[in-house]
Length: 75
Image 1 (cartoon, helix red, strand yellow):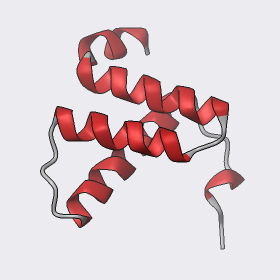
Image 2 (image 1 turned 180 degrees about the vertical axis):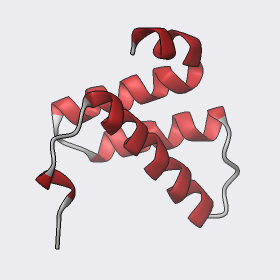
Image 3 (image 1 turned 90 degrees about the horizontal axis):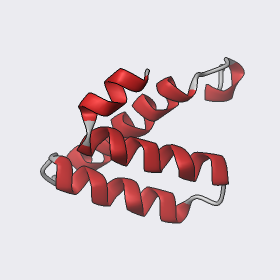
């Protein structure tokens, strides 16, 4: 079986994966998916992670949700 870490992934792809996981988690829990719930879910996910690089990616994901036009220009 191939693990997620078997292929190099860019930070942009990782941010998209993080946002996707948050959306799926909210959907599974029957929660509404909107900017506010996504931001809170990403914050909770960051709180549960000990990897400083991934915590930064959660912060970037939150910023991308709240300011998508800036994120699109930066990539």
